[in-house]
Each structure stands twice: as C-alpha cells, then as structure tokens.
Length: 386
Image (spheres, rainbow, N blue to C red):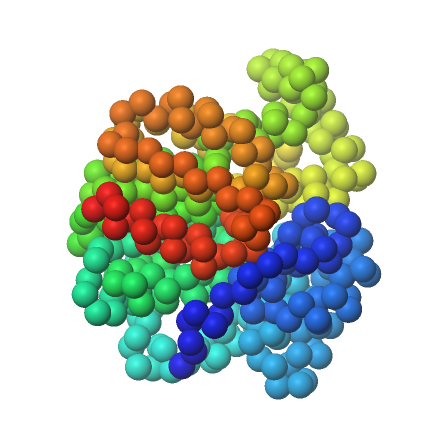
C-alpha cells in the first residue's frame, strides 16, 4: 500500500521551450509518477509528435528494464498522448499502461479497497472506480477529467478524498480514456446524460461533482440538469471552447473566423486550419485530437461541434454551490475568462473563485504543480458549504 501524501509532488520544471510539451512533461511527473531526472535527459530532444512518441517509449522501456514499474507506466501512458488516431501504437501503449497500472495497484483491487464497475450507457459501458470514505463519512464525490484525460491519473486524488471522509466515484465518460480508445465513443456536450447513468446505477444523492480541465465546463453543465448534484467544483475556468479559441486570436482573426463559421464556409475553414496546423505543433495536436475525440471528419465539423461545448447558455439553470478553480499562467486558458462565468451564474446558491498562482507552484493548467494544495482547497470548500 502507498502513503498517499507522499505521492503528491510540488513544483514545476522548465523541461521544453514549447509550452504544451513542457506542460505535458510536467504532467508526466506531477500526476503520473514520472521521474524529473528521466524527463530532463530526453526533454530537449522533443520537438514534435514523432519525437515525443520515440523518446517517451524509450524512456518507458528503460524504466521497465530497471524494474521501475511506476515510472514505466507514466512514460507508456503519456507516450500515447501525442499519437494520432490510426497509429497502431496508440492502442498498444494505452493497453500496456492500463494493464501495468492494474498490476501495480493490485492490492487495492484485490482487497476491495477500490472496486471497479462498468455502467451501461447507450451502446457502451462507462468505467468507474469506487472507494469508500475512511473514518466519518462527510459526503460523496463524483469525479471526472476533461478533454484528454485518463481516469488512472486521478487515482491518487481519489484516494486522498477517501482518506478525508468521502465516498468517491471516479469515472470516464464518452470521449475519455477507454470509452474513446477501446469502445470508440466520442464526446457528448450533454454531460448530464452519462452523469445521470452513473448516479442512477449507484442511487446517488447529495453529491459534489468535480470536473477537471474541460470538466470545468462539463460538470456545471451536468449540474444544470441533475439536481441530485448539490455542489460543483469546476477544476478549470472553461466558459466554452470557442471562448478559449477566440481568446488566443487577434480581434481581426476572431471576426474573420466568426464570419466564416456563420456563412458555413467549410472549404475555406478547412484550408486555413490545415495550413496553420503544419506550422504550429500545438494546433496540429489539438486539431488531430479534436477530430478523434469529438467524432469529426474535418476542422469545420470539429469547430461546429465544439461550439456546443459551453456553459453560458445553461448557466442560469445552475442553482447549486459552485467553486471555480483557475490558474494565472494557464497556457490553454486565459484566466480572465472567468468573468464570463461569474456574469452568467446568476442563480447559484454560492459562488467561490480561487485563482492559484505560480508563487504557489499552482499557476499551470489544472494547477499541475501543486495538486495537494488544490485537493485541500476543494475539501475545505465542500465542508464550508455542506
């Protein structure tokens, strides 16, 4: 068994000059159990998706040969991250990392400290990990990730919630983890539907839902329609995908793109995005992942679908206690977008916004440099509004 507190690391590293690669390398260390010394040796050789794959697989092979299974899991899991749909190695290394994860945490599953379930939903089964509260039960947490998550990387936060008195149901929905990779089910913006399936299955009520990254939009969306959810933790500022995109573009580009989408100029949109992706590695990955995870066949179709992924139009239906957690150096999301959410949440029971900074080692996306601080913030907030 592990000492959960010891699993949390604090800090951040300047591994790579490209912001998204640098973030994902930090994520490999902070959330997935990688060793910063390993990452430091190969980080400078990563310049694109191909070199990411090559270096991370090699690192996994080395760690495995040395008997460092925890680190090997991290490298194999994250090696798949930048592989494109259709690469046979994508599924190979996803399966390998998942298998090794199950073996590494075997005692938890054998002793029923963590129980795995499959919940029927439409034409697939949603994987759920459940662990019960230790000591006096303080509540129920329904926990999920976002745009590119695996539920395995939230295993330690799940155990931490349990140690602090919460029953925890950690799940993957459509577009995530094995639901996407093994069952082929893309995302749905109607997140209340998979959430309802899970809450019905386990007869849950008086729940706190926690959604990370894109989950910062999906969790509030579910709460708008599912009133058995009483508290919402949006673990990322995320009013909507198009808000995030437009925040990265100059005003003229925003106007131009908006006009192209309004006039349904599919051919032009596809040409522009495909051309830009050749010059921008982050856009190339984002576009490829978007087509894969959202069941789209072109950039235009992906943008059309992503425009539905927003919470502003249903925000007046959210009447629960809400905690929004942001980061002031988030390379994906301009933290100032939280103003849109504050303005839209007109009927919440209470609204708390916590913006973490780099001085707290928590200024990166989803505060990846100081997860324990964020977990403690969530736990204290839940107690204060329950």
